[in-house]
Length: 160
Image 1 (tube, rainbow, N blue to C red):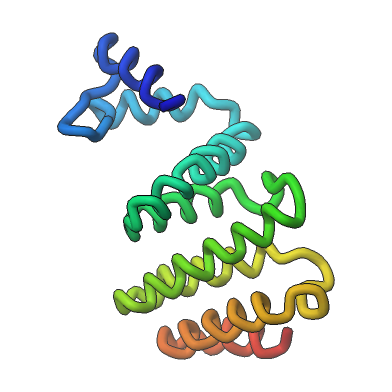
Image 2 (cartoon, rainbow, N blue to C red; image 1 turned 90 degrees about the vertical axis):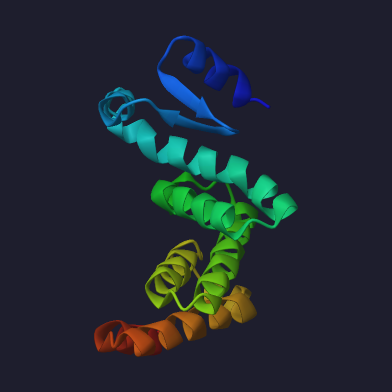
C-alpha cells in the first residue's frame, strides 16, 4: 500500500502507465531519466529496500517470478545494505530458495547467480556458525557450476 499512492500520482501526471494491475514507464527514456536522478550511492539501497518490500508479497502469493525479482533487487543492493546478521541469514536463505526454484526450471545460470549471491551475504565464520545453510549454498552453486561447465567457479567453491 505504501507504494500504490506514489504510483497513482505518477500515473495521473503521465509519468507512468497503468495496465491492468501493473505500472510501467510510458517510455524507456522516462525510466532512464528517473533512475539517473537517484544518486549512485543511493541506488543500491533503493534496490535493496524494493526487494525486501516484495518478499512478503511473493511468499504470500507463492509467485516464483516475484520471488526472483525480489531476490534480484536485494542482490543488486548487496551485502553492504544489510542491517544485521539475522537479515543477512534471511537473505541468504531467500537466495537459496530462489536458486532451487530456478534449478527446477533448468535455469542453471540464474540459479548459480542466486546461490553465489546467497554466499556473499554470509558473514565471517559462516562454516562454523551456519554450517547447514553454508553447505546447501555451496553444494547447489557447485552443482550449477558443473552443469554450466564453469570449472574455475567449481574449483573456487570446492576450495572454500
